[in-house]
Length: 327
Image (cartoon, rainbow, N blue to C red; front, side):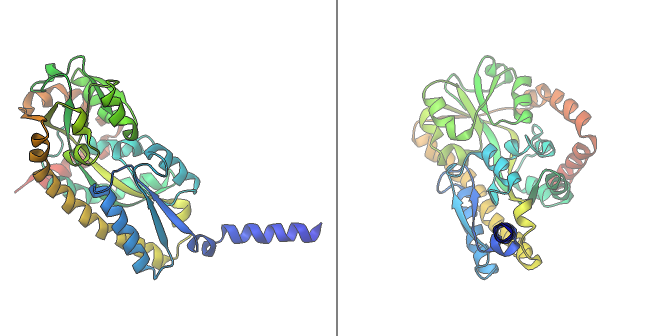
């Protein structure tokens, strides 16, 4: 009996040891389709980690929700059963609510402005908050400025959203924005969105053009309105339980790989925004621009609500955004 107990104890120690983790093929989950900037950056990240750790850390990438959707990925990382996820800002805010602040309506007017904020002190605040929930923020990748698509009518003013069922991520900030604009926000996993649009479960959705194109959502949407109502990042996250098993050198290698892959992600995202409109117009989708002023006025209540919940963080983000907008 003593020999059996000793054997079990040794076996348990080996499974839990850092060396055992390093010898495993670790997984990275994301929900994007092949060719999407998130998907390509995830593959680049895996390649760079293998190079920088001389093969000690190997990553297997599972896109298109192969390893579960964003919510499942966050749960798995917190349990230590999944190592990495190129997740969504909105979904992450369900676990670490501070991330939602980046999605304040009409906060950013351009991608470079948003990136300046993401590369500054705001990221440190978000990483600190993430660690309290069992996650490590490796880098802030890009998920673009979001636009509205639907099958009912072009959106030119807030009143055009009345009664339209808009799919949103499971993100309280986005829900607040569309409630303020008079729409009927309907949270739904991204992996279920195409079929929901095709079958009329929802009338429309909101995403950056790169997501609308790479996931072929334009095939089941008549109108895309360039509302630019919010920005979203792609937080590249690690399980703290897994990350803490790495040596200091391997931790640094993973962080460097995340930053380098993030450059590819941002380059692809910026390029896509310039090229994809004409491709979708050629497929029959009708585009329109909007005057943002009435939309901004309608969403002032969203700022009031979130300033009460996170006064210091909202003030910091607004300050950094204003500085980033300066010529």
